[in-house]
Image 1 (cartoon, rainbow, N blue to C red):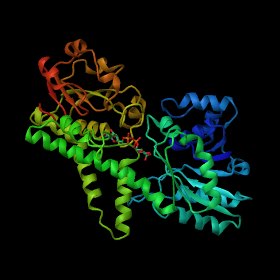
Image 2: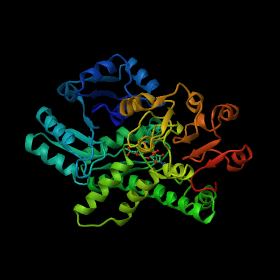
Image 3: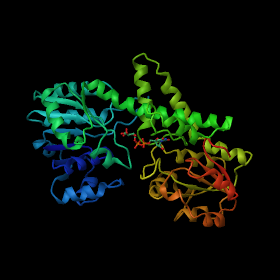
Image 4: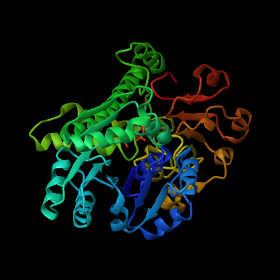
Length: 434
Ligand code: UGA
């Protein structure tokens, strides 16, 4: 099938590349000419494990193309994916100007029936808005389909190639058939393609992310309670996760959820509920709990040093909002760095991928270490903020030798408490005894 993908951000690039991998002809469009040129030269502008291999292979085999010319991209494509940003507007609602702007441009260019698919996370009713814009500017037949993306950064290729489910929101028979054919190679193991109306599909995406965020905030509150009653959250997690109705995944307490999706989507769903005169109480609590949880490690540090962090040197391991990505959007690490600097602390940081991004935001207020051991040299304490594998089994001899004091604040519960105590550490983690 011939496909156009409008927008070559994270979702667009993964979608375009993975659609080419099953033999489709894909042309990706972006207004950023510099970026297009870079991709035409075979350079991938984002870091995502496994993507580069597929990206290069599909370019080399002539199935994946890049252009800044929307008209040329649309000409032969039957299906047009919109993978454009929907940033939160000033009032918390998603800003649809990119999506609706693209719909208007597309309306002016199409000459025959097209299926226009929203991949971006968009509020309920957006498909109707896109339809209205198209109807206003063209007489050509079209269908607007909601097809939310459920991929996770870090495992995006695997999530796209082997999805748990595909949700397709359209009542247009032709579009249904085309979308079903397009996704058939991805659901060969029998995972469902769930067809529904556009509004239900749009809401499914927000409901999924908000439910997952709720799970995390719930576990973070259980962790805080565990500390007060002397229980161990890792045990409680295993205890409840073994119940199939609850499930083992996404029950890890920590320093709050971050990233470009959960914070934005929970906020947008709460806002959309409010607009419909519905007070979505749980979502407000989920957001409040997350705000508190993001600061919890700083509170622990402050308590330990009796409120005085001036001149204290802290090493930070992990900056990205989660492992296997260089993404620092809404990363808890940024909040923690900010708070510690405000308290007068001196920081030395290391992350396997996100250093450059943090440099761009935080600048030279902190020291960017060459490796994880360089970061801890002479530090009063180590703070662990992202659960990169490389931090899970460190060389404790180097830790002992380089840290000024054997003090670790672990926001990701990476180590065995007893082992740390036996090794003489003050080890403060989340929801477990100190
Ligand atoms: C999330 C969803 O998981 C995807 O299904 C969805 O497609 C995506 O948002 C999106 O809307 O585009 P992502 O933001 O890449 O994916 O990251 P997650 O792996 O879901 O992690 C989100 C945050 O939750 C991270 O800060 C992570 O540290 C935190 N988390 C996750 C926990 O604190 N505990 C857990 O048990 C799991």
